[in-house]
Image (cartoon, rainbow, N blue to C red; front, top):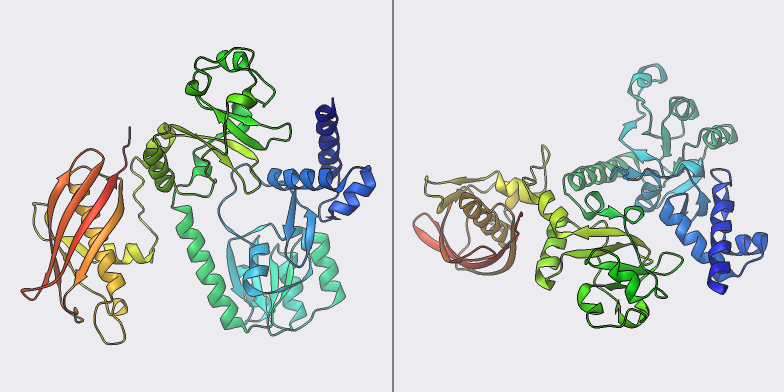
Length: 437
């Protein structure tokens, strides 16, 4: 009866929070006082509300009621993340901090000229020009005031009404533009990487058990790994067919379940999770948040399907790995020989190819070799690279690859690197080949 009462109080708190106005601040103490519950109960409910996306805790601001996040939000930069990244101060529009930023505009032109460049959910970077700040807000853009300048109460009031943040930073315009541009580029790269968040089965579509359920309850379900959760949704274990084999139907799940099970977070890449699953011989894993609240389950089949044809293509600039890959080409039709032409940006201060770049060159050549042999999902596990002499700028690197061992799940390869007819390095690489079906 006590657990049922606690669950009811929990739901009452969530409903109370959901009824609050967007932008209103809350705290454990205020919730506990308003609903006459313990601070521990209030804390758990607030964490669940944060998981549900109806509140957010923002550094130097506090916990506030926000508009509910979509089930699968785009992995874009939020204004709240800008606050932390730029060590900025929030002057107004706190309830809009969780909105997503898609571009920024530098307000260095006249008011009439900047109008066409301002769009919804963009960011206007400007100094102490209140007319430009107001124009940005009226057109749906947030404002970042550089140089430590303040703004008027009228601008702050407009920001609060429109739920558009007005931020202040002591940094100059060039510095903040550089930082934001790098962050937007990083976010664009992240969007090309498939994560668990896009492939797991949500909790609402799952059957779960509770510690007070019995073996008989499990036996009525499909013989798969089933998560065990508390009344508040916290994962406490899993049950598999092996766990209940030979057990009495009346035995409690709490006595047979696997405690502290292996779990994954939604932001992990599918390649990382595939490696974890294969290494531990499991086909289903619970997906949890940082508070161990169950979000769903991910299966090896879903991971395998997502790996089919998901080779990262990158953007116009792409990642460092993309830039190295663009400089590698097959030297012949055998698929065993490759050439690499270094770029000036890949050399160190002495004008020689850096060791880190050379490692990535081997990585990309090995991936290309295995791709030629119909292995598309490659994870380099170990590399022993001996660098004998420096590679100067303008020198072409030749890579000859020989398979020492190659089977369905693993590959061991010998890589011989030469330049101008001389051996410059030798590598032995071990890879795991992630299955697609």
